[in-house]
Image: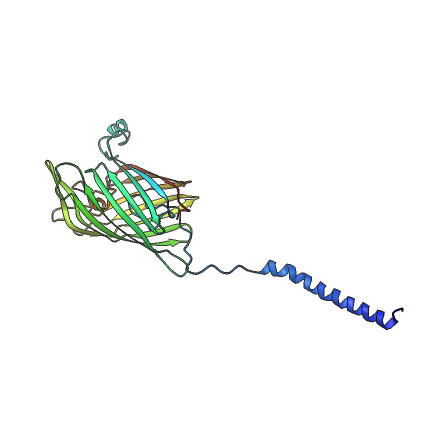
Length: 306
């Protein structure tokens, strides 16, 4: 049986409609993936941090590495000020590089997410510092600051000392400006701080001391930053002790799991019970003292750092 002309016409019409429908859907198959947007990041997702590590030079930051990360740290502060003596004397001592140094070695471990445990030992009074730092909140689009809490204690193990132990607490508040700069403030309370040496004994200048060190960093290149720290004059200084503010300034370079830091400072203190007091080894700080120092840090293991 042959199809009638009407049936053939109706069949062509249906085929054309199917073709037209499929042709209209074809652009949408390309356009939907092209213009589809991924869901917006949560306003509470932490910002990507500047690569500063868990300290500036001496002062703590509100950053810690990822869970399971270990870190070793070496600090070195030359004793002789580069403005000491005549110009010939400075050349002879390589601007203090030939002098003795205050040296420290530390080890830290991120035991759990946002919790870091640390150990630091300095040859100054054989001071051992144990501390824990916890990240309370991290800056995000909906959160303007990062906040961390740090607490610990020091034991001075050198012979013939009084007031061997101190405890301290710190709140670390920071604000990051884009991906280029960050500022920090660290309200700090410490007991039995500052050392005054008389003969073979050393006692604390402070039973209780409070100060608010501040710091900041500006990144000028990939993982290269200019860093500065300021410790204001401590208002709890004993009468007759005329000290000036403490400061440090220098550069920091992050390379892989390493941090390299070169600085100039008027305060060789690296432990909390030393740097909050506006004194060092019992002597008041002077802004004009110029000591060269450096830090080297190495991270290994764990997850991505922040």
